[in-house]
Length: 362
Picture: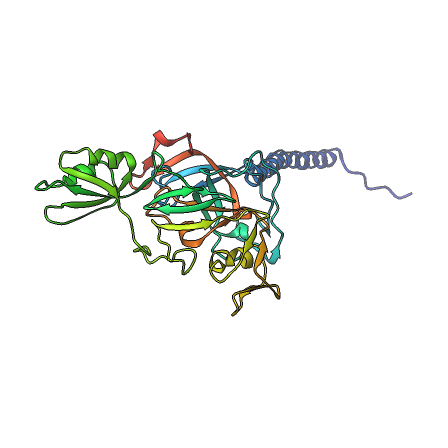
């Protein structure tokens, strides 16, 4: 009977050791992979349904939000918006041509006038959730009528004055024979300053209402008034609605649509609601020569709105591209409510602003 090949004792020991080493390595890999996978799932869940972090890149919300502030945005307030495009998280890759209808889970309250919101820029093309993020303050909401008179917004006839950290442009006039103290105005921390007249008799500057009041109290100054632009802005920006004759500082009246509203359409109102019908609510529509609107092949003078809309402005009123320029923000474009500055970095001084960390966004 032939002998069977039986491993020696040392060979059996080596095989067992190799098996144990492989098991140990596998256990080590699993011990690392499992927490990493759970952390990734938790991060995706929090980013998608609870909070998302954003950095402030421009001066349009000064002085409430500064360039370099890092802000937490709550998705729970208005309800988390479900994904619209399909792609890899934290990357720009997505499946072209695949877009899901906008849907939102329930939140614990509605968007309110005065909220600071982050939203996807309505004037861009492409999937809503892949568009550039903007941050502005809600000035008027669904069903509100808005008018801006000499920089002051009026919502349903009620003035909405500047908040403590909001800023705009002012013009200060010197008393006869007095010299305007430029250095003192600069010392207030204004970002924009220009002068005119003999001995700087008129000075324009950008600042808060408190700064304007301080300048007005100086002996050399006779008056400080809002610097009001007449007609289209000097920056060459178009004004919404096109052809309305509105200006940034003298604007309206304009009605902000609410879900369920019946809009009365005409040649006059078409510029205000064209994008709402064609881009935001996805209809094929055009203005007919007889003044009626053709929507999906049917002439009509009425349209029932499907979702709520909002009119937003930057807190830095004269240095903000906002609804005065490009129009309404649809509800399905809103990401969430800005609630907290969790970190702040001064790009000019190259150091943290410790006094701003953990401040609430008001």
